[in-house]
Length: 155
Image (cartoon, rainbow, N blue to C red; front, side, top):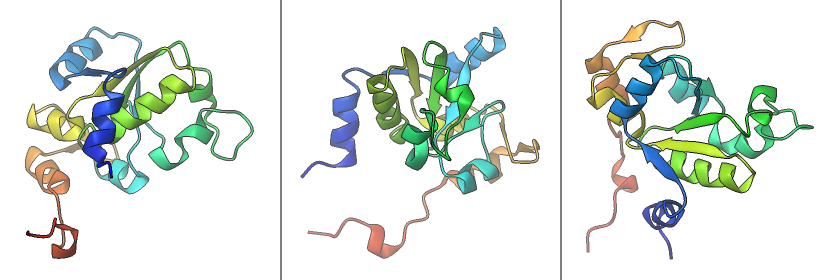
């Protein structure tokens, strides 16, 4: 049986990553980048990187193609644009980047460490009202909130 870490490792054979501080430099240079946050809407509303487009992972494939209720035209036509895929920790974004490569997207990077790393590097995150979220609040939101049932059984 494969774990998510196994799947991510396999996808990293072809998916390139970018670190938060390198993305910050690119954004400050005003490069034409599309930030694609694939977290769930409830996650995105709490905090996200300014300028990100939210398309949840669960509808990504339909969002990238015409003829679906989930179609996002600016994403369908972005196959030759530089896309930075973002999630919470950098794992879902690797899987999504791999899928987008299969779908013909040519210039994709996954944000290594996701918004957790972005916040750890003390870069700004905003909420759905475009209000900057403090580091402490972001830390609390991004902290795992696992129940005992979600923990690996002790052997």
